[in-house]
Image: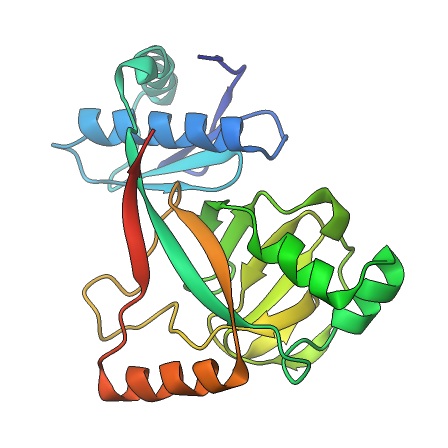
Length: 244
């Protein structure tokens, strides 16, 4: 397994930031998650919060760090133990998406820019199995890696002031879903009827970094049916546990 050259630095009086080389790919994400897990296992008796992103981990201590460089040396020693941590299984979620023109605001633009028929765009977008890099900028916003190279698209020159909840879009080399209505500059392909962030649940976001996502095209009638099932509390996201 590849070992990366990491940088460690104080981040205020209560935190340490660990950074990987700024190259976003699945190998880096898996390495981040392995190290995150070994840190959690070794800090189980301490009050710390550990947050990860594409290429970094931020460790927030619930106290001042008296000897911060000793703490950094400790973290460096833990990194070499990460190969002992196995992430052998993950959840694969099948996410319904309606690519109807009503929702797919930028399908024609993408079709024109990429010289691909809309049907081929939908196929290219719904075929891959994506990995969740991390969750942000909105609660429940899943940043997904694995987008087909043919669909890489720069963000819109002028972001929309309002993007619908559930909008599925492309921004650069990534795809993602807007969990709530918000401004946004991604190219919109369709819409998913399900909830990606629900504060009434013990786990507001059903997925986590390292899990996998696959989009499943649905019709407008199926979209409306799922919406009705959600209101009735009878809809369940299709998922399975896969082992590496």
